[in-house]
Image 1 (cartoon, rainbow, N blue to C red):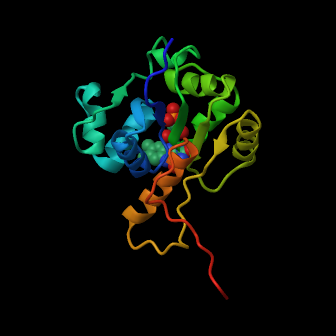
Image 2 (image 1 turned 180 degrees about the horizontal axis):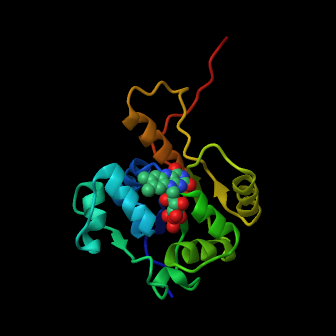
Length: 205
Ligand SMILES: Cc1cc2nc3c(=O)[nH]c(=O)nc-3n(C[C@H](O)[C@H](O)[C@H](O)COP(=O)(O)O)c2cc1C
């Protein structure tokens, strides 16, 4: 079967603080010419988070992508988390990469244990078994032993653990700067490097 022209990316949103990261990543993906399709899956806690942190509640879930990015979403398709028969539940569906952003400790634990009882965790499980990039933007602090062990387990299974930790060495002025720069790095991990990503050039002592 012919592969779609551009990249296909799955984004999972779980109930960890940092809805702004998801919003920024989705905006960049929708605007990126190299991307032809984005599947969006949110857990129940993820939907609650969008309501708490962004005041975004979609009466019609299909409208969630546009509500989230603040303009008509061209490429983002919302897939209900309960729909375990959706396309991305199968490795035969051509998906290039997936990011869970933000990723809760609970979702990390499910993925680390191979529990795939909803679409989000199943899609992540499929990425691991098909050896496709899976980026988990964990947001939790402090971390207990179970979290630390789960991070190692998913790492060893092929995932990239990318904690939602903004940096300061590029001199961000606003929360928006921090969110955007982190989102650029998530896209880079998905194989979509961004021109606007700050790159350290070194500095003389
Ligand atoms: C507003 C809000 C913020 C939360 N923040 C976090 C967080 O930063 N990290 C985390 O691991 N869990 C956080 N939780 C708890 C998770 O949402 C909870 O464990 C949930 O069961 C995770 O389910 P999910 O992985 O299916 O999304 C938060 C919950 C709420 C309501």
